[in-house]
Image (cartoon, rainbow, N blue to C red; front, side):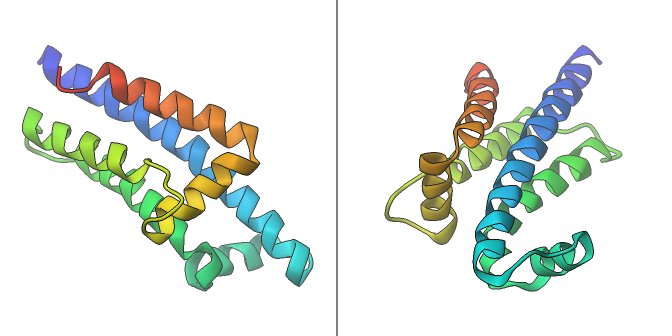
Length: 134
């Protein structure tokens, strides 16, 4: 029972940190988009996030947040293996790279340009490092 409570707390904390990171990345992408295309409303932004290629790379992060929701709502207890695999996946996703897949390169650029993204990234990485293979 205690293990399940700890898992829930960990996933909840990770979810909140990923949401903050996602919000900052989305805001930075919105600003970049508006510099070229002009100001957009909230409704327009939602449509852009869903369907515009400039925002598509953020879907990978959104998917991880949804996965946390699904893990937390699962009827069966989650195995430690499933948690470890998921955490490893998040660690891999949040590894910036100048050359790599689209997420890695755009994430790297966001880290170079935005101190708030750096701080949010550090929050997530710190949480993940306290849970690594332990």
